[in-house]
Image (tube, rainbow, N blue to C red; front, top):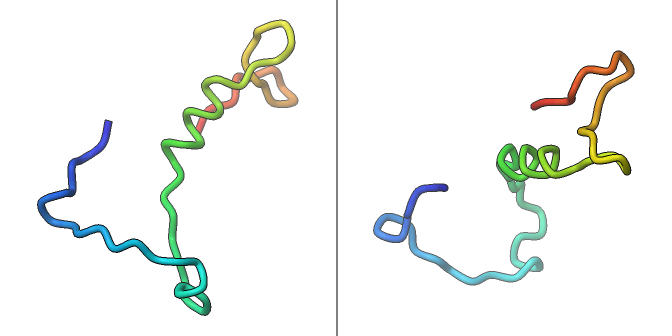
Length: 57
């Protein structure tokens, strides 16, 4: 999944120190979805809220 940005984006290795004082945004929707889809209770059932509904993003 994803888009190949190699032709339009150039990778520039950087350090955390060079980012000090800057604002950084991260789109974590896919990572959160994958996390919730694999998280299970000890009996193998999916995570649920206090009303017993399966948690979704």
